[in-house]
Length: 308
Ligand SMILES: Cc1cc2nc3c(=O)[nH]c(=O)nc-3n(C[C@H](O)[C@H](O)[C@H](O)COP(=O)(O)OP(=O)(O)OC[C@H]3O[C@@H](n4cnc5c(N)ncnc54)[C@H](O)[C@@H]3O)c2cc1C
Image 1 (cartoon, helix red, strand yellow):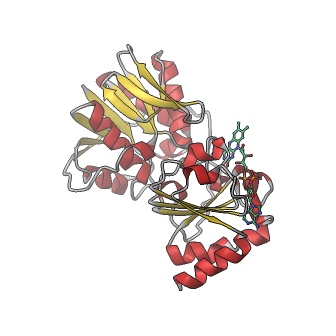
Image 2: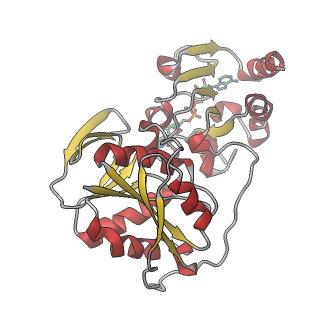
């Protein structure tokens, strides 16, 4: 049995989600290959070759492979016959590409696998993480998206071979017109070691900036509840939760967030949770390791001053 991991990369290096997915793949199969598909992405392939446990890196390099899910799915399908497992992180990219692959292979995708029990049996959270389903796949090729926070990142120290593969034909169904990259200077939310998250309790976009100095002092990413996003305080890619990003940092500081079940679904695996809320009955305190009952507009500046 051999697993194929679909790498997420920025052409020069791997995204952290790929490292977690490689660990999941190693729990399925003794032999793991990584597909790096894109344009001018040899450096990302070299980075994949340096991951421990990876036996081979397949490099598919062509301009049209950087343009969207259709062509990437085509590339995976061209290689699929040689694999027992195909895995991608359950990120926006993985969730767009793998269902296309599963449909074309006529297999049932296993979404958000959080544990590999055996090579054909997996656990996955359902009902916003309140139930863990154990699912067994009888399909010849298992197609899985992986809940990255449930697997440790694979370490470096590998020395895999990089093999160029023929790029699959361009399906021509989508064209990349432009790419806008927002650089905040902060760690990427999904992989950050510390997250400071704000909720509706902050009251406005202007007030949300109160979290900046706290995040700066801690070197943290900033996240938000859906209520804060829906109110327009912050962009929607900051949302943590069932319909946002899943995070599991070392430290999660929830500021003015009530702790609705859909929010907890995205952060309750955090190692240490600190909650600041003026309502002592707020559900967030049920999952918090440390709780501060009080007005966030007084407490956050005090924390910033203490950290200085
Ligand atoms: C299908 C579905 C999917 C969803 N997906 C998500 C998701 O992915 N992520 C998500 O977050 N939500 C999600 N939600 C919404 C979720 O149900 C809640 O509505 C949302 O999480 C509430 O956000 P909040 O905690 O910021 O706001 P509220 O629930 O309004 O809480 C605000 C908190 O701030 C506190 N507060 C107010 N002022 C202060 C102050 N001065 N000092 C200290 N504390 C203060 C209040 O006591 C309160 O606890 C989803 C809902 C549905 C139905």
